[in-house]
Length: 87
Image 1 (cartoon, rainbow, N blue to C red):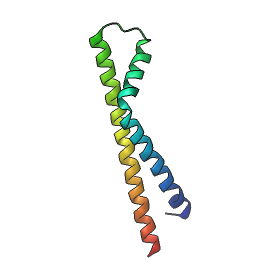
Image 2: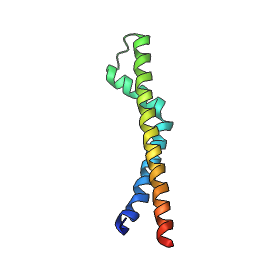
Image 3: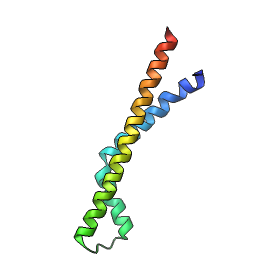
Image 4: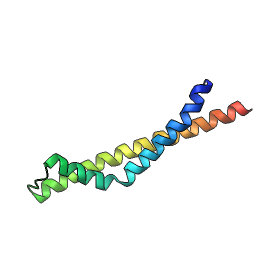
């Protein structure tokens, strides 16, 4: 890896890790807000709205987990490459 990629990779990985953590923590609120926006603010039936909230919450949870994993993996890879260059 060249030096430019080694400087950029830890920063991008850390930002991805933090974004995934924030999305994962706030997934319930984000799911509820997305369901309200999709429904146009008009709640038709409690069961339908509950299904919308659960679906959006699951989507945000999966997205946050993927970003968290990829960010952590990128941080580990950058640490390994930095240690290899020191030797």
